Image (cartoon, rainbow, N blue to C red; front, side, top):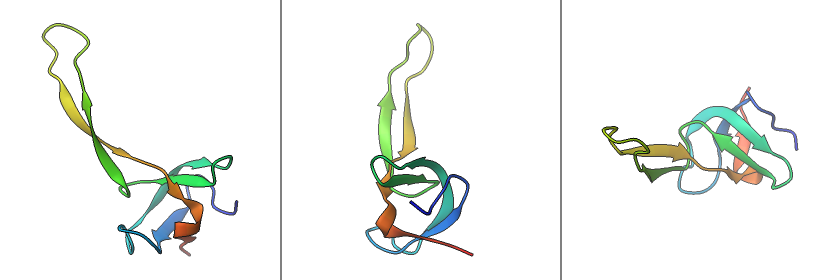
Amino acid sequence: MKIKKGDNVIVIAGSNKGKKGKVLKALPALNKVVVEGVNTRKKAHKSKKRGDPSQILEISMPIHVSNVAKQE
């Protein structure tokens, strides 16, 4: 896998085509990468302690490495 953590990439395929971002995590065993601000999902986070509010978090999910290209 030629794309590493910290590289700037552009998405070349899929619903996020054209978006740019930085690689936050590389998963070489799965051939996937997590790109900042790309392929985000909303996840409900329930409060653990009494009095703390529950919240909805936006989490970047992995996308296949073939759908991104290294940006120079």
